[in-house]
Image (cartoon, rainbow, N blue to C red; front, side):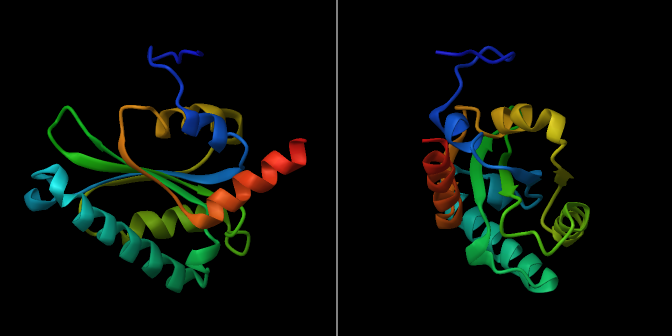
Length: 156
């Protein structure tokens, strides 16, 4: 099994995700202590995340159902839950990646947001970081699952 620079084994998620071209890389944290208090708050964080994505889609006139998103929650050493996510380029072509990243950054009101365009020369490193196996609650949107399936079929 391949090992990363950080010393952990690459996850199965990594090998699926590298098949897709991504445009956005992000990490969200919540300022509200109740959202960080326990793993049980995951449902609240999950609902919050999808409301946020839906709002950004409505602002940018994107269809949420077409977005390929991989999302994972993780408990940080600072005792806070946070969310890692990446968004595929397919489904967001109508909006420049810089505009999408800026809107995502500007619309997050619940804590800290570190959201960037993926540097194509470092895309695999970003995917590797986002899919590290220490996380919890991994979610692939149906659109992302279709993108992975399509990419696999193209390589056959």
